[in-house]
Image 1: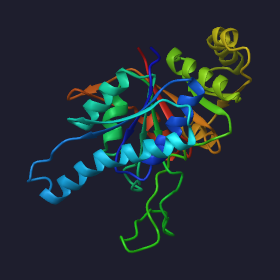
Image 2: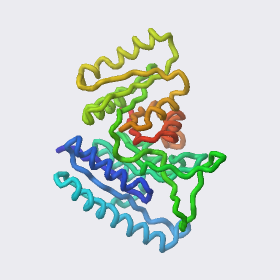
Image 3: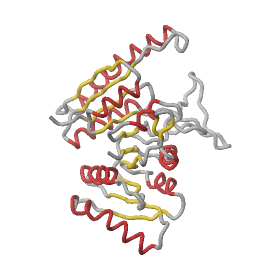
Image 4: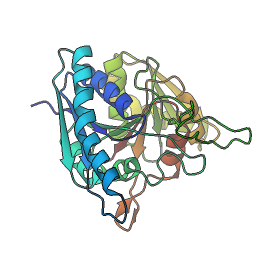
Length: 294
């Protein structure tokens, strides 16, 4: 049985965009699409009765309505919608383990903490054992003259949007490579994604050795993937400055940016993303796949 592409739907502005991204991805992979929402009753000390009931109603209604919309656009796609009951990160990680990948919609971000700060997305992407793709609506929060982002009140016309880009991209696939310890899982995911989309693959690595040595190491790292995906055109680029900025800039107009989740450093049982990945996720304007090592 083919594993599905799963979308974890939440109450962010990027949630429906993630569902549309997931539908296109499932079509490319000839896989079923599974829409899930994760809901957990909050104690009264944290949430009012009304807010609990609204969240519960949302978790039932929106995935079903979104599935109906997607069936109209993708009539040949096998689409299911279900609600999971329990802590959202745990439920989403469990759903991811049964899937080819998990897509999550992300919402607005504050200029200081980034969209991952304290969110379900952060907790999920850090510990999931399958690739997690973060997708937003493609809109940025309005910016003040001093560079800090702000939100309008509920009656205003402006709404905060995520940095992570919209669901459909026709540009290249971008992958970051650490030549010291390259992630075979991230490279495999990136080559596959580029092949499925008939897109160019842009490989970005940090320059920290003589150029000839870097080139030798890079070619050795990529050689097995060239053989496996001869249809994928590859362009290589060495990041002279900060690799996070280079990756984020390359992601402008990209179909997908792929990052490897490196060695996990555990703090109170929760794996951390790492500074570079967090920086890319904070700045990037394309959907981002975070691929863990097995």
